[in-house]
Image 1 (tube, rainbow, N blue to C red):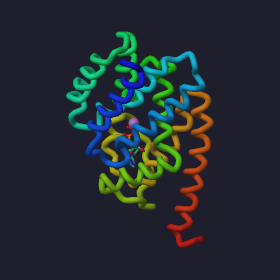
Image 2: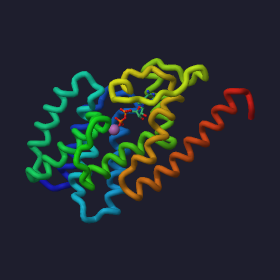
Image 3: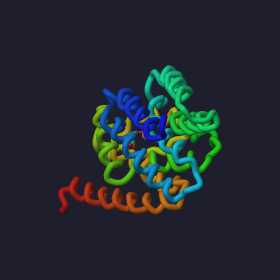
Image 4: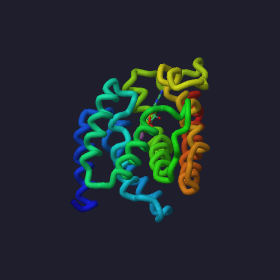
Length: 216
Ligand code: ADP
Ligand code: NI
């Protein structure tokens, strides 16, 4: 099987997995992370681009926020086992996916290969900027949360459990997560992109607060 065929087959597998997904976290999120990963990979010619592409495509299939994450992880491992790639590549892909899906970043750091760093940056970039804003409101709506409530101040979370249980308004999510992401980028190029997206979100919030108070 050619590399292109392996990628196309994986795209079909992922599309099926995400058929009924909420719109901030659907096939199109995967598509954007895949595209961004390929873009970032161009700056790192000595990395394994096939591992990057496959890990990007598969990174959210077994996301720990879904109840059936463990079952999905089994399904995913079976899928990866059958791919026509080396054992080392298979292990590398599984390592990246586990590191990204299971919010271990609060507790311990998995080994960060460049391939890991690139997919993580791409995933984090998709949470900020214009798309990030849209995803936050989509997620908040899906969870029935308030858009904004000036009486509820943002929290800072001590662990992943506290973060997951949060019911705060969507605007608070900017302070609780989105504005922190720019300083968490691994690669130089992603840092530059994150800077631009970050400034866009700041500008957006200024306008939002002005409109909230009937100014402008
Ligand atoms: P990912 O799996 O892509 O790393 P998450 O699963 O944490 O990210 O979140 C998916 C999307 O929903 C992201 O864009 C994130 O910012 C948004 N989101 C997560 N939690 C909240 C929240 N409490 N309020 C608003 N948006 C949220
Ligand atoms: Ni993701």
